[in-house]
Length: 219
Image (cartoon, rainbow, N blue to C red):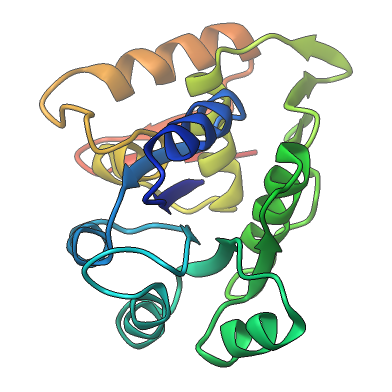
């Protein structure tokens, strides 16, 4: 999953970003509405974690823009505006979830995982295929009952591949979904991560290279 955080309180935004990265959620962080729309225009985010009272362009307008131009991106409003009227108006402009500050970080993670599973493509809480069981909530992977220890990035890439349900994903798509905006598209990062994943999961290989196209998780 890849998320964009829009939070004008620098310390809080950086704390959220650090915490989400530890949960294998690739994140970018911006501090105002205009920059948020620039990032949303250039990148394919799964989730937008959006404060409402932000500089340049109000969060409600960012949400409305997202609904009109990036409808596959889920919006979670994370804001100090906590009255029932605030929540109703947030849902009216297009938010799919609403979490008031102060909040418990594990609840934010659970809500983001829940948003990830909503249609478009519905995702079960635990993904199982070809003897591999991936639990994004516990951040655990098992192969034929054997616990497989993965790095955060390896876990994120495997999650993206398994969520595609056999679809072929390019290296660029994997970079888009599992890394943040600082990733260098001209490195061998994806290839190395895939190689490490294969080695850790063991034979028979469940990640296939499709020459000239990309990779897929296959039974």
